[in-house]
Length: 387
View 1: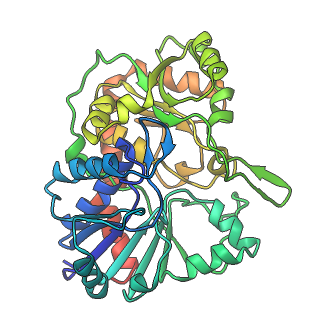
View 2 (view 1 turned 30 degrees about the vertical axis):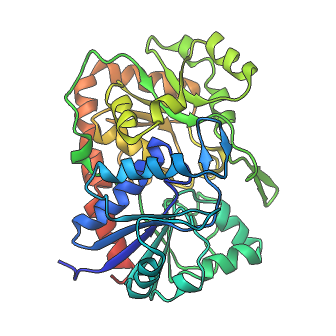
């Protein structure tokens, strides 16, 4: 058993108060705590919060603080979180003085999602771990000599990425300058244990339809930081399978919503199913499984990326049919977890799950435990980060 360390997890669940992002934070904080560490969750990035009710960045963080308070309180973490208001400077949780002392005394900082630009007070900590949950973008910036990207990464002592296949012969994205190690999205299976339900009807997912602002060009190719292109490749899937398919999407334009509905997709409100961590979990548990695609950036490059959301479906015993990103080299797929390249592959995979739903459900849960269990994933990460 490793010695008990004091670890600060920097993240953005308050900045983006949505169920899936909340669970990402919870899995890291609780997972590290289960390994015996003294863990504190902190948001201190200076970035203005997003309010999903108005779909906009705002100055008033009241809603965001309450979301975080509720999420942490549900898992006995009520005294283990701090949110620093970017507008007023108010500290919710630890006082300014106690937070400064925490930074001085911490053994490690985990900067999950690269959520925080590290400052002088963070640099007092001897081990500063960058945990990249969306690979490819930063690796391209480094390869292109982007000084801002390089300087930000240089403030960390260890670098981890969900891109398990980066730098491999079948992936065009190089690993340069930094000693990137691989990791996976952790999940705590006990928090997702769900009775087998053969009557559940819909394969679902929760996603943003279109992201903008982070497309990037590299070696003659433009890689898109968005899922909408790959969803459009699947637009006719409802006509090719009897399986009902639902997307809880944040879709801002009426034309896209109309196209999806006309093509047979069932649409749900992304905010309503993600408004807190409990509602988000219930939505996944009530699903038959997940059908989803990946961002062009991680799929076309065969980065090996896997989704934090999909591991929640797996842990709930809900099979996942998802776009191939190269993850099959590292995580077994074919039963419980099925990868597709084409719309024909996707239809075949959905039908295969429904022919033996009990077997696929059982295997989904096993994959979550064996390959994404938080204590296993984070235990390895801690060892490789010299903790």
